[in-house]
Amino acid sequence: MRAMVYRGPYKIRMEEKERPAVEHPNDAIVRVQLAAICGSDLHLYHGMMPDTRIGHTFGHEFIGVVDEAGSSVQNLAVGDRVMVPFNIFCGTCWYCARGLYSNCHNVNPNATAVGGIYGYSHTTGGYDGGQAEYVRVPFADVGPSKIPDWMADEDAVLLT
Image (cartoon, rainbow, N blue to C red; front, side, top):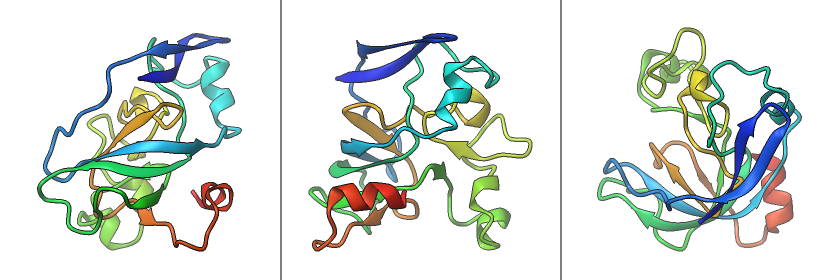
């Protein structure tokens, strides 16, 4: 698959990477339809975000279609259009129970004050982002939201 990857400060390029696979029963694989570029991507581009590694895929704001769902995923099915929030969270920990999803420590082994974020360095969990053809979406039952049939993709991506 093609993906926009980090090659060092001020250096990004489109490269071929392996398509992500379901790693856990609660994962989904989303085929990206649209991805936004966020102002915070500039922190990565300028080399100012700690532990941004060569080959990391950018993009934490994206929508797409569920291409594959793990055996434990109950709220999504293959073919569902979804918007995926920038942060990754488990939905059950102390932080998630209080609505503090961006502090979920169950999704980031490097957690001190931040949880997991798509496409935003290994400081935030090392999850590849949505500026790619496919993304592995962990905890698929609690993160992504189905996009209503009446909503255009261009509008939905602005809600991520």
